[in-house]
Image (cartoon, rainbow, N blue to C red; front, side, top):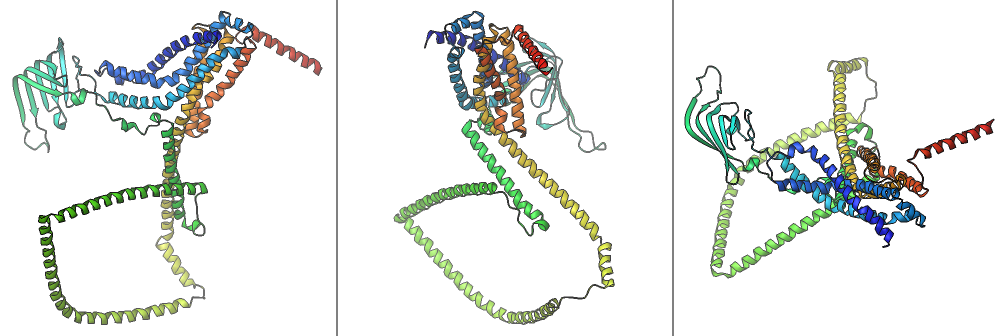
Length: 599
């Protein structure tokens, strides 16, 4: 590495680390403010909050890297231009692109590292972040009773203290007990003073009450006419109540498998599997819609078939074949297990048969089975003879009746066939038409047909709308998985795009420090952030392709970067008023020439 590369790279790494820490801290503060009321004030240890903040820092780093690269590259080349070091580099015959090469190589390596982090590290950190954040949000607030305010943090109790004395002393205590699921203020305790102290590693809380009264009343169940309910009043000098704080005020960690379906905790291979499964569900739903729609319209589809498209059929056949293979594998596995069990049973039976005591048991079982079979056969023979003799006469009578009924049916069928073979050729008479019209009008067939048609159309409309929403939901999930897949690449490539904007822009501005570079970098980062949100929204709603939506911000900013590189190579003064004055004068001169030619 040459001295020039060391100089430029050394002047870049320091501002990069500083700006990355600052930007990460700012983004961390913005994200933590969303959950500030839900995670703080719950009496958790410092290490729980440190763990959560560490997870947030890692998960926010993909967003902080592009802004850090933009700001640090702009500051680096701004400082070089301000101190005329960049001018000396150019005067020695070194081009601007050669001066950009060491930082460009570093940014390319950084982009590759950002891709690896987005694909492997950030999904695991997001899983732990979601799990810990959910557990903290579900935890009850810390036990902190304030004077003059009812405290309902302990399940089943509502406590009010008029005055707190020291760390554990209480005065003028009112307690309403709702233990056992009872509603209403039927159990109340009043005490002059008391003490509340934790014990057993703060898993339990003991409330000692002094000089008080306990009031309890039964609930009235029927009405006014029933007898008055029982009312008890008990006075005490000392009363102790123990509260179990283990399940209420301790942090219970949720299993991480509960978040396994979230796309933000998956890497690229897992996202591809999710896309394939969603595509299978979507294809099955569309195929079922085609199959069911053909049976819905029997009038229009009786002469033709409503077949799904070819790609839907091919995907359905592929999915069915995969399911078939999986079922065959399961069956073979179950058959192998059954064979192993049957072989084990055979082996145990052989071993038992060799034992002399087992041989006696087997012979005894055989003798008992033979005796039971012989007795059953004898009884069946004796009962069979009697039943045959008794039912023979009844069978003859039943056969005679069935023959007569068959003869009558054949005669009727022959008459019907003769009538049907001679169709009517004469038209309907006026009397017959009036009878048919009266049947239609009097019995309300027209009205019934209209109501049935309306109900059928409404049910069909509801069914189609439900199916349409299901298909739209599947498509939206598919697009979101695609966006999560492409974001792994765009967030990494954004570092290089911001370098193309920041480095030549710093060479043009020629001002370092935290003044103009910070302002310009914030403006471009806001533009990048707005374009990213807009493109992702278009992709989620299906307005644009997910690939185009995720790359939309970079495609919009790359021309700016290339334009700034071109202007920096020409030493353009884009941020000086003389440049625009000279540009305006050239435009005016051009118009004068055109007018003179026209005249």
